[in-house]
Image 1 (spheres, rainbow, N blue to C red):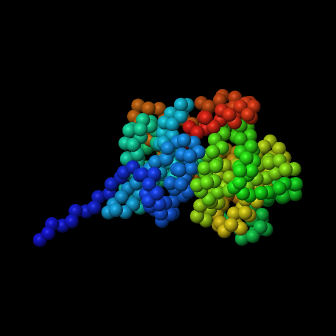
Image 2: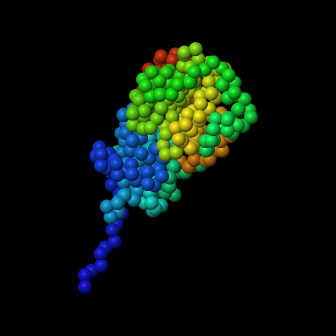
Length: 352
């Protein structure tokens, strides 16, 4: 009698994201398991193109089939150190697997990978992590809700106080355009860079936004006043969801209610394109942005983030709300915009 077949074991290996077949296989796995856009190899590729931070990941396999996937960006910064992030420059990610045991196995493999690549930190923006890792669910919230069935219903769904602000924006002489051309990107970058400078944050490289527009389903909605761009938002589309991911306005946008008009017009645009949900993105718990999104009628959902720090190393601190960076932020707000735009991308590409 023949001996019984040995049970096939699950193994974890480094993915080869330079191979189209490997990438297609992982993209299919992400779609089958309902992963977010930040799980996609296309996201890692856009980040690598736009910031120079290498995209990589770990796959779990059993019997020749994928059973798990952990996307990561290898982020290195002379200011903030080195880390593996799942996923880099994202608000979501983490291990995606058919079983919890596989997720934990991917995390343990990530620890070994981090040690080999001299990364002192691993950050997971979602997903299951080992008990020994630091886990937080009180730092950030997400905001998602269904889009209404027509324009009037969309406006009526906004709570009264915020609806009044949107109406003021609708009454102002504002022009709305949506596209992916260089002209839209130029307008967006001018408003976004001014917005983040005013917040004391370095601006990302322009080529990051170019890469996201190239690699993913995305577009830019621009609000102009007398032909001048005053607000803009780059939106990523995935599944049934529209996510305004990067956005901002000039100082004049507030008085014009340009940001309020911008997000309302984006909701209408997303619905006409067949999307069913609006993901207002992540906000720091208790922040002004957190309150703003609640004013629109969105319910805050806590996000769970996890981190691992190598033994003997200090935890990475790139949080812009950290007291450690308060003086730097105050100084950055005072920089002339051309100076901030010149220095910002050098620093921002290492934030992760």
